[in-house]
Image (cartoon, rainbow, N blue to C red; front, side, top):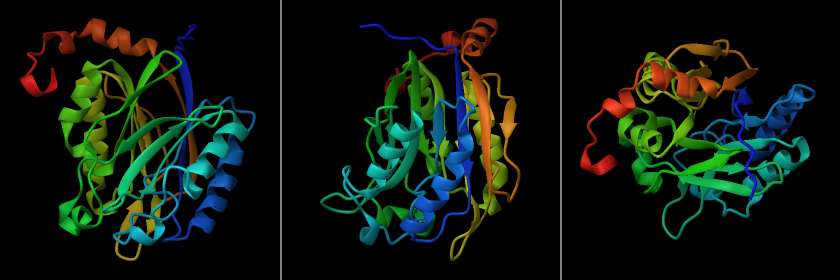
Length: 267
C-alpha cells in the first residue's frame, strides 16, 4: 500500500461563540465559517470541544451514537470540502455520555475516535460524563496525529505517551474559560516544547450560562514558539501551515526525547 508522506499541512481553526444547547444554530455557524476556506488549500479543519451544544453538564438529552446527527454533519463537511474534519460531541453509552472527539477523512470516513480521559470534577463533569480509557493516534498522510480534549491538557503523561509512539502533532480542542486562560497559553507551549511536536489549540469565545470564554486559539511549533494565534474575543478562521520537517530538525538539535529515562507506565 502506498502512503503519501506530507511535510506540510494547512490547518484551519474555527473559533466562534457556541449557541448554548442548540445544534441547529451551531451547525449553521460552522457552515458559515467553513465556507471561508474555499480556495485556500486547507487540509484539516478543527472545531471546538462539544461544538454543537456547548460545554453542558446536561448532556443526556443531546447524546448521540456514532451514526447520529453530529457525526453525520462532520462526515458530510469532510466530503464536501475535501478536508479532514475534527470535532467532539456527546456520545451516548449504556450509562453516562462520553465527550468524544471524532476525525473524518476526505471521503467522510471516521478514522479516529477518542473520549476525554480527564473529567473536571470541580464543576461536576465526572458526575455527568463517563471518562475515556485510552489515547488515540491515527496516521494522516504519513504523519501520526493525536487528539486530546480541554482538561486533558493539564496531564502531561498522555502527551508524552503519544510523542513516544511517534506523534508529530497533537490537537487540543477545548472550551477553556477566560478565568484560567493564562494556563491555556502556558500549557500549550509547554506540551509542544517538552514533546517537540506541533500543538494545535482550538478554543471558543462568548459566554455559556455561567462561564466566559475569550479564544486564544493558536498553533505552536516543536520548539514551543507560537506561529499563529487568533484574536481575543473575536470570531475567526485561523489558518496556519505545519512544516513537519521542523519536528526532526528540533529533535536532532536537542535530543531530549532520546535522553529521557522512560518510566514504566509510559514506555
